[in-house]
Amino acid sequence: MANYFVCLADQLPCPDQSQVLVTEIGVEDFGAIGITPGTVGMAFTLGFGMVFSIAVMGLVVGWLVRVIRGI
Image (cartoon, rainbow, N blue to C red; front, side):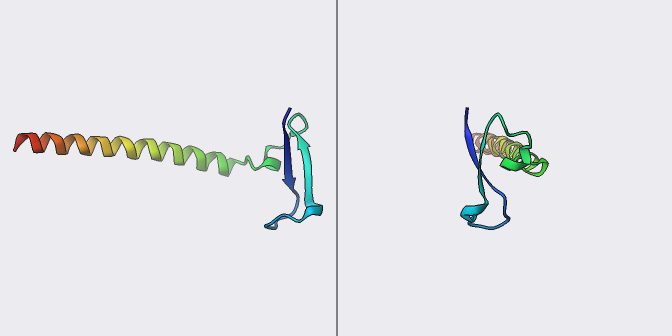
């Protein structure tokens, strides 16, 4: 069982009186621990973008190697 500190105020840093300890079993609202549709979409987009950019870089390096070998 894990415990999380959740800040109830929209302030950084979080004031001590606004911090609440929540156990993993008691967390029913994913937004309370920062998992929102926006963060899930951002994580998916970042992961897809990184994999796609590495694939494109590999493709370009392959083309460059083929051109250099052809010279």
